[in-house]
Length: 431
Image (tube, rainbow, N blue to C red):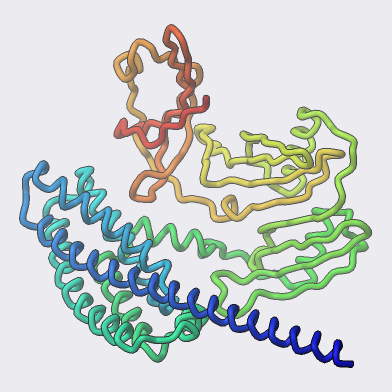
């Protein structure tokens, strides 16, 4: 009995020491993380002061050379502060709005350095930005000083991370303040507004479909699930666009499909099932993919990309403009096919459904490629395609596959050149 009592006593002592050490380690970790957050906030405050100065400097020069350094500083500091803010346990609303504002400010400075913003527009916008930054910096200083002086415990920092509205710190009010700055300093351009409408599927004005109609549509597109067990639900109020979510289970297969409520368009499909050991050829897979695309009603697309892993093939289709046979890369469909038999296991049609607005009557200016490229560049293929410029506008382009050869190596490039402005919108090295 005495031996047992001794063992229990020793065990309690060991456990006590273990718990004590654990508490000590936890306290040290809390102090380290709190110090890290404090340092981050201090860094952000110092960089905000530097950003104010850089914006002021960028407004006093007209000479392009003199503007280079402050413009570069604006872009760099905006990015640095975004990184600091992202790592701090602050109101998520504030973090989102402040990072958005900083991102737009940095992008605006980058466009000015590329001479894509006029001097008048630059002066008008930065004068307002400078004033707003001064006002915001004062609010930021008060908030951070109060927060740091309180020496908030680690548990309260964690609570800040997990709480959407930081009602005890005033950050929510600052979020609304920054949102107002963003809307006044960098209002959405027509192209950005169009882009947001496209993203939110605002252009779909088809007649709404009932839940039963969408279920029947799914069974037509995917006959394997005709007798599947289905669970259907609608998107929550406030969603960017209304849709039906259909979960299904049929034997070894389970997954889900999403359809828009307006028009009953397929948005996405995901099927999970074991993949067998058989393998179909790449050509067989392509034919199955093309046949499936047509059966789903996607008859204006072209297969342009195939990739594989050890279980599935991933393919990409893009819409083809019928007038000039140009590829519209923004209007894409992604599919996933099983390697054993080519069954469709995944579909994503969001980009295809959004359907980009294409330019009307864009000029096609002939370009002498011999003077456009060096003598080492040889054009292997030429066609038309659409891609986006810096203003988020779709532009008709010459799409060129160019081979550059030297004595010891060769590289292939894919280059997109605006047919009207001759601006190079995209350059990609293929090998």
